[in-house]
Length: 166
Image (cartoon, rainbow, N blue to C red; front, side, top):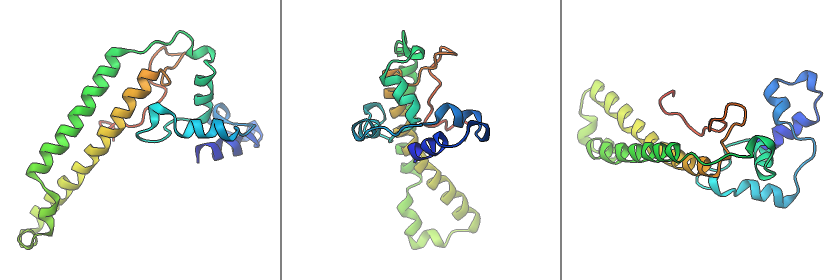
């Protein structure tokens, strides 16, 4: 999907594109090996490709913005701890709000407010399982330095999820 849109943008005149489309446009399709490598790029193996093909190509060719980039172990550690928090919240939350209880006839006998709040909270807990995976994926993305932004000198080029902003 990402490559398709970028390739379509590559065939479109730049005066009809937005700035981010101009930055991510691909004028020539990658060969099959380059495409497959992008699809199974190790740092994004957990969640799939989380960034534009153009960024992947710049990273693999060690474009000037990636030269001198070193892994920020403090950031990697905090991101890992954040992922552990999400999985723990999910595990302990499902102890108190198990989803199978919603199939129990006793559950349907409860009041509407109870059913509503219980359902919202237990279904929201499911998101934390995915936050765990996405944040764990961010650890490997940061470790590989593919999220490094050469202009800002920060690791904020790629962000698979930000649950606090959701």
